[in-house]
Image (cartoon, rainbow, N blue to C red; front, side, top):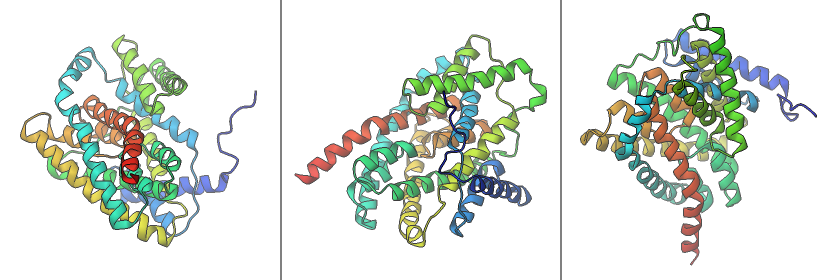
Length: 354
């Protein structure tokens, strides 16, 4: 049986090395300038700048997904019986998630189609706040522009993730410089091995049954089971979570590789405008939640900000927020988009053609 290649045959090893060096330079620059979240925002910024000046870059998809399992284990390991029981009280804010997805889609389709001239499929799947891969697959099948979709969703994730640390610090004085965990040297070896097995096994089991976001949700579920049964007592060490941030940031930033001036003027500019709309809509929903005291404002912001699932998990962990609350809302958002987007797109497109 042939072993799968770590680096795909169509990816240059030199490009992979260059991408890692650029991402590491971004980390160093953020440390020197005392900017927040250097291990996440540094690689994003470094790779974005390199892409805009024409540097060819490439990542290692299997390694990026492996790093995401660390976040799944980090969330699942915090589960307790009391925490699981408290999830029933989230229903009032969970009901707002599908409403927010509907409003985003309604505003976004008109924005992309009428203001920027994208076709319906590209406009619809650009507006949907789902996972990048899912929106690319659905959009391509519907006749959308895959390159535009990729740049628009990458920009959405980048802008939301870059803006939130400053908002968290400005409104709640959240210290984002604290280590996201304890040093690896302080953890028992048996717990470290269990975390590694949990991450890989949970990922592959979730992938086998077709679970969306398998690299995060699979390890989270399995780690939660182990935590509730008393087998897992610790969260992954700080070094592991920093590594996960690094590869997630590098993955987001390197998606701009090969971007052209025309794409920046149209696709990226359209995405930046849409990000302003998303931030305004998020603020409106968070204000509603705060008005009726449905949830703490910081948790509400992290739960309703339409960034990437992995990136929002990182922010919730580092900010010391209620991770279960934040992840539950993002899971529902992704489920709503994945299940509802293709159906709604067909109905909307059919009614338009009639």
